[in-house]
Amino acid sequence: MFGVDGEVSNDVYVFRTWCFVFVWPKGNNTANTSPTAELLETDYLVVGAGASGMVFVDELLHRTEDTTFVLIDRLSQPGGHWNHAYSFVRLHQPSYFYGVNSELLEGEKGKIDYASKHEILTYYEKVLRKMLDTGRVVFLSQTRDMVRFNR
Image (cartoon, rainbow, N blue to C red; front, side, top):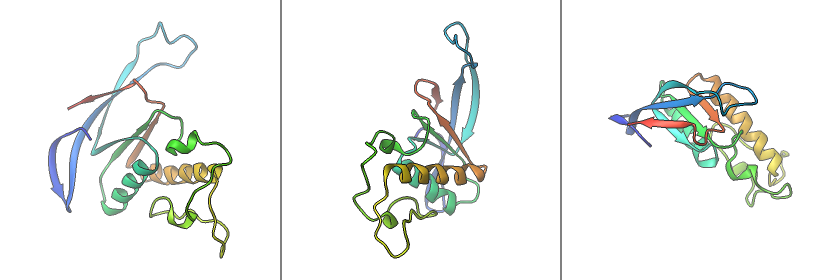
């Protein structure tokens, strides 16, 4: 976590962070174009939209009323290592015990279910949509080498 102006609020350390995001214009030839920079101010900059990053944002979203987040990932969608897993890979624990607290990952009622890669990626997309709908989360995908931090 990068930040200054640390403060303690409800037993949670809150850091104000400034993040410069460089955006290239769309088109086939980006080599001859210059990026534009956009300054985003946030309380938390979370690097990685895998299980840990999603759980962290989910917990603080539901424990605070005005905390903001910029969630960045080098991949195009949330889900972390599940984006690279073979299609036959499943959870090694019942789905009911996996994921974020605000959204259950459930299979068939009354049956112990071990979610598939597709089910988990769909689940994380649903969770991300709910986070974005709060207006307190910005998700920047495919951000490798495109974000600079100002401490």
